[in-house]
Amino acid sequence: QKEVEQDPGPLSVPEGAIVSLNCTYSNSAFQYFMWYRQYSRKGPELLMYTYSSGNKEDGRFTAQVDKSSKYISLFIRDSQPSDSATYLCAMSAGRGSTLGRLYFGRGTQLTVWP
Amino acid sequence: ETGVTQTPRHLVMGMTNKKSLKCEQHLGHNAMYWYKQSAKKPLELMFVYNFKEQTENNSVPSRFSPECPNSSHLFLHLHTLQPEDSALYLCASSQNRGQVDGYTFGSGTRLTVV
Image (cartoon, rainbow over all chains, first blue to last red; front, side, top):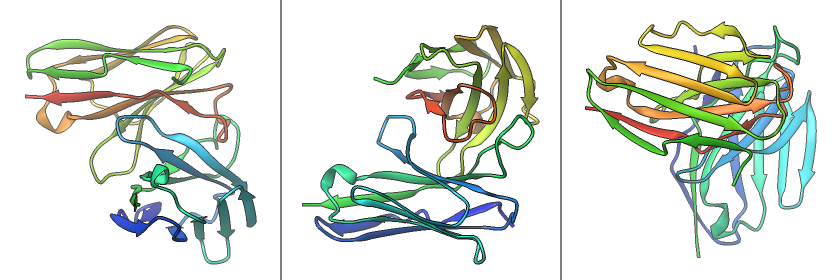
């Protein structure tokens, strides 16, 4: 079983739609959860960072973590064509040299059409 | 443009060639990483350097040879590669190893082995 599972899509939605992206994981030691956005021909950039369970909101983006279900989500409200990118989830057991390794999902390719 | 610069952006090499990838960061970070991103696969950690010392080699074949002459520069020397090594090679840095919310990625080198 892979450490992190993520549906690669592709996902195609109209402008203004609410987008839901999800990842599941198997390692109960994961405590730090991140979402990265990767535009074509670019490296990943950190979009959201969450510690432990709960919600975090930043503008049109909301990250949710449910550790009991080992399930994380990223919601994008009022999606824009500029949101078209690949979204990668990543997680880690903790900070520090022995725990700070990141485990990534495969990424979900999102297209928002006008 | 991010604070992590990778050159070249694209590279095509034969299986008998020797080439090098270069990464430079201007962020004052102490940890640097090499990742491999293949189509439909999660990012794979290859090497970790912390204060110029290699701290992790994720079972990478010896045809990949990293070098970190100082905290700002990281190289990946390539020789006798295989076609399955074709991928996007990403460099990243963070203030300290294990700072999971502080990774900055470069735009990557797209490598094609023919």
